[in-house]
Length: 239
Image 1 (tube, rainbow, N blue to C red):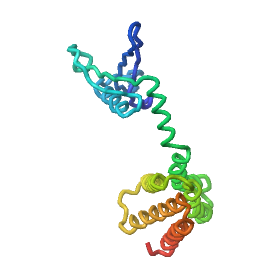
Image 2: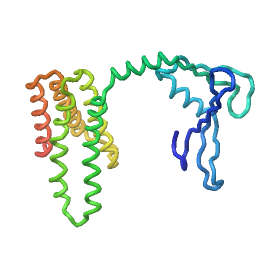
Image 3: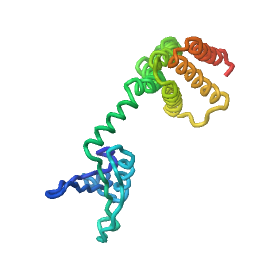
Image 4: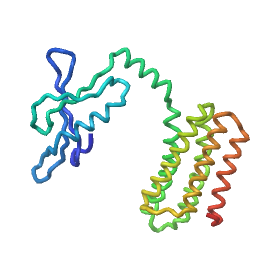
């Protein structure tokens, strides 16, 4: 886990010749250009990573530690013991997981995130590739995508879906896109009015999602009108 030329957590597995168990050895390491190879920095952080990563997995029954008494190698004399569920339990967990999540659940927040960051990335790339073209031309192309696409995507992807789920996915996806968009251009302090405006945009999309999920066209329309009104307000300098 990590990057080859950076820092990573390295795991090695050793199968048992007798018994139904596998030994894992994990350590953290980084690429040392002066040594032209990886340098191990310790095993404690690697063990904690494995414990935290596997603790909530459906195929794990327990995560405990056992003191074996042999200090050395950075282990402190402790083993991490991970119990795995039987195959039938794994199949049942996978079936329940497939019932809980679907492609639409991933597509909704992913699409909203992609639109916000995609428009930002396209604008940055366009002005770099075409430095002699006025940026206003890029705005004419990019802004309609940002203004129209989110409510359309939410209307389509939230239709006939569980209302609570699409509301949370819509809010988290679009809000994450806004935060990452500001972080991408180095915004560290957001004016209060601007923060309120962004929260209101998220709320408008949530109304669109809820109306679409419940098949309530009027409520969906209310959300779309609120979304467009907030955009107009920002264009007129109200925000």
